Image 1 (cartoon, rainbow, N blue to C red):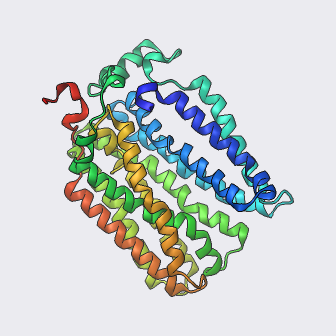
Image 2: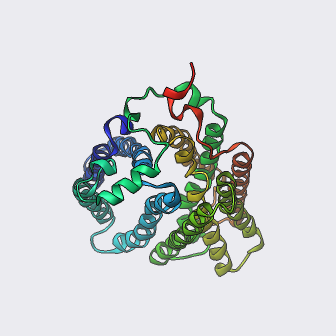
Image 3: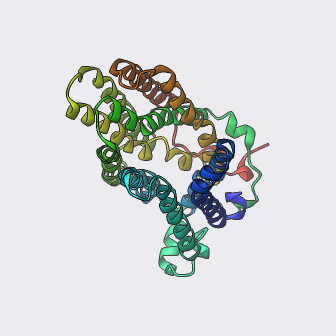
Length: 370
């Protein structure tokens, strides 16, 4: 849909629906059964499924190759910046006289405001943007040689995509990344609260710290990645794999290092912060390869990768819940950390061996012999 109809309005409707449902959560929770509340959350998840494909389809039309790492990273780092802001603010709002419902009112309102602004400033491509200069438009369009202006009419090469080894490697590494990321995102507050004994307000601040540092590292890494790519210091595939290894192997090492920290709260916070923040490398690593492999089908590709990869987003917290029966038990938490570290390592290894940044033949079906 994002390729055929453009990402602008699809992204608008996805965000506005999700935002309105967020605003309704307190009312539904207080006046209906938990089943209705869960159905509301499921509906939010369904419309959020449009986000990554739309962002990829949009970025493929706007990001010149020599600026791709920065643009792609700056866009996707919004998820981390949102996490950094929301965690401490949510802690204060929950402890305020307005209580937990205020969290949903504030975040839902932000989504509504963004949606309105997006209607005025968003555009599917440089060709249909009303205010950019002709020079900028020409620079962007002329640099995107692998993106066809006719791609909205292409038939999606489903078989080629689903049998592509680099795509399968991309799905696997995304699954492994989401396992560690969502385990820490959903469970880190519990670990900080029950094992390290932080109160609600301190917990929010400490929980958000890794995502702040991840934002800052993303700026640094993306500039360095574009510098390396512009000067051809490394082949693009090698550059992607090095950045991804920094994220996954560094994150795994930090989680394993937790076993050597028995009583130091500061040491534990430093290692957990390191594990999460080094994840900034994935934006220059495997995530950007969806644009590399097929600029014309980058939205479809990200939809497939994110759909299958996100299976671990709910598996990881569930498995952690089965392992950690006693939330105050450091030993049980360490088992969960070891599992995440191992999954990080395996996912990165598969990406190194089978991943690629070469444009695939099926990127332009008109040029593929049948």
